[in-house]
Length: 603
Ligand code: ADP
Image 1: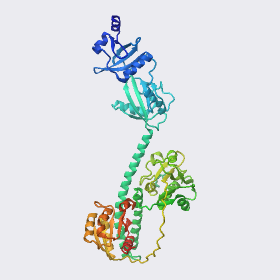
Image 2: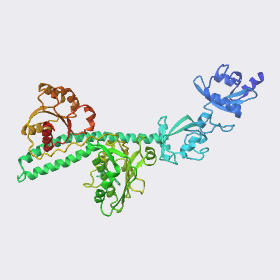
Image 3: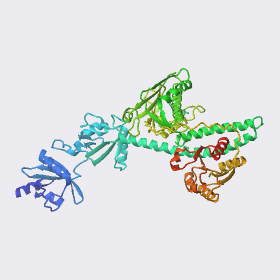
Image 4: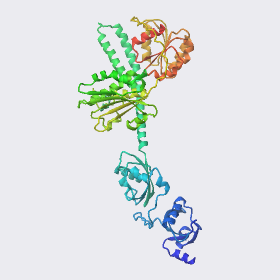
């Protein structure tokens, strides 16, 4: 044993001899002076376990040994039966520029790293990107799209831009994960984790292409949602103002009929209000708050009926090819709105092929959600079959920097005066309101393709009630009547003018500016109110809540809601209520007066 101790003392490096369980059998002077007195190796965790395993297998293993707050590189060498020679190599002995001398064959990745679903690599060198990959698992090669990565530098496997960004982040002290793109497929994205330090690094690479795509989609959807809210709010306020203008214009037109010097101007104001109402309505459609009448529709029939109109909409040198497949699923949608959506897409396609005198293809087909998701860009829920409406053209296509914006209201690339930028926003709103999905694709050189996916509607079996006998249309232009009306509307501009016009036509009108006030008035006039007209959305108590609370005082008096929003928005709040009807804003005098008269007459 003295011999061994003498031998260990003679070693330039700190050296010791240990048994497989870590008990120190003999230690040299240098070891003792560096590590102090110890009878066994400090615990080293899995790294030390692996180093011992490597020593057993290859003759030599290495690991980092932490003792008294300092890191040492520990070399473990098999030295006869059940004996290991340990040597400590100081950190300062290792110049970062001299690669570690290794007298053994390359370490193999342990079974965990080798079979991991993410890429793993060991890199040797002063810098993780200039160092050479000495070991890597199969997943790493697959993610970077290379046959072999051993002997290659990590820097060449990633795009130069990624390497630059990561290097800058590392220099700034960030620890990652870093977003990188493989050089062979820069449309993919991976997360890079780096551990270790010169001269040896471990790199882990996780493919996050799918997650990233979902993230972008989600952000896009949130943006559209936010714009929708904004557009809906603007349209709602706009409708109130338009109601006030339109009601006054109607009133003036009655006083200054055709032949009066003011008639032309008034008629012009009236027509302008109608155009403005059209814009407000498109915004409401976009924000999915337009009034829809959804019904079960035969899509093939809708498109066939539309064909003649579509041909007429396009210039003569543009060909249209309409194909409706067999066995098309039924859809539940508003017929006029679906027509509107197809017309918008076809008009855009027609505009796009203007220069080339080209072809617009419209096709409808039944597709499974799975097939749509794989080949057609559908990102909605799986499950039921879908109706696909596709409008494609062979025009110049949509540039990549534009395609993310085309569904936004007022986004247009057309010259001033030609585009409103509301076409696709309207289509988007219609599709969303019909529980559908829309995607735009523009493969280079192949024009633009718009695809609408609508869920199949399987109508429940119902026995139709016999049709009600047709009521003879009242042709009387007499819009006057009698009765007591409770009129609830928070917008003063609308309430005051509408109430005045109704009073002029013979009604007694009690005005309330919100739900609470209306409830108090209803109680006060219990049993004597002939009709309640109420806005739906008001600060405080909303229309449907007011109705529920005021019902005992109203008896079976009819109720009419007026709103700039869709009936569907609140129809479920009215469950169980009867005698309720709906009038959309902006109001005009004729419909208001006609409806009031009809409701009070009990029609
Ligand atoms: P507008 O047609 O008034 O510009 P849209 O909302 O209908 O408004 O369309 C927005 C933009 O989308 C257009 O200005 C155009 O840039 C682009 N776009 C729509 N359809 C096509 C198409 N078929 N081909 C190329 N670009 C299109």
